Length: 408
Image 1 (cartoon, one colour):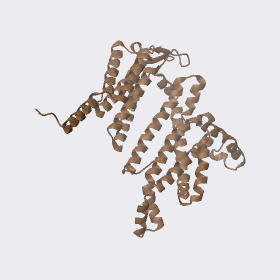
Image 2: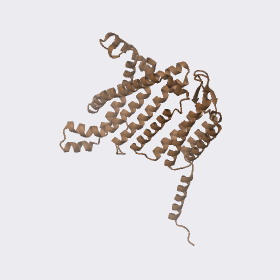
Image 3: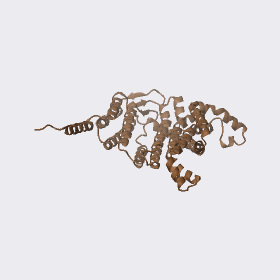
Image 4: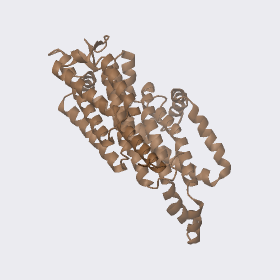
């Protein structure tokens, strides 16, 4: 009987390694499962307040829900953690993570109904640390599974639309009506949507202004080398000013403009309010727009320009039909950076009377009302998250070639 040769031995060892990898633990999944399990075991599932400003009383999961529902939720989370712990297929991890988040969302709504005394309009029930920790762990698992599946841009957009639709159905069904954040919303529904419009106006309006100014400046920097360093360094210095400080610094000059420039006050320019918030967001948006425009134009291969020149294309034709289309994905990346940044920074407009979701955040801080803070913070996070997914997908659609850099 002859022994196995070196090739056969190496092949067998490789097969053993592949089997171990398939059957072993998933590193990220093990961390997320440990986080979820620890959160569920050691953190309260709900927080009960007799009214909106008193200290909260933590309520464990077995007391926050009817016994059968509590144990069912524990079983679902434990089973889902087991799926994350092992090297399971990405599709299974995606489905399990989504289902766990759905069960968790329904359970926290049921907790609000279970803990709120009947006919009591003062009591408040909010999600506790266990809910947020478990939701965080399985949200990361969901994102990781979508990356492992290498989902196409359209598939990611479809997943985002499905998630948004599921959340809307949950809110529409009234399953969360007993939670404190929904009670805060009910008391301020008209104000909420007005501030939402202001928040979007600040974020998208400043982005539009930065695009109108920043893209031509980027083109100028690309074509006129001597001014590039001066302009980009100036914008870099502007970017280093703390946001709250910049908002404050703009109050005095804009108040002077409103007082001394005819018609300025009539169009809304003032020392406080939307005007300084808009100008500050516009200023912070210029650097990404200018630098990404320069980077996009520099990423166009010289051979492509030479070929276009050899075909007899004029300088104008080369710019609009060659340079700009090839640079567009990088410019779009700059737009993505600016939009996500501005959606977050617009919260600070609430400090100077500019409105937006920051109004609720700072009112909640001043009143020690956590749920009012969340009423402003959660929509901001959701908008930034959705904007990042949508624009990332658009960047990939605009730039299907994977080897071309789209970062600046």
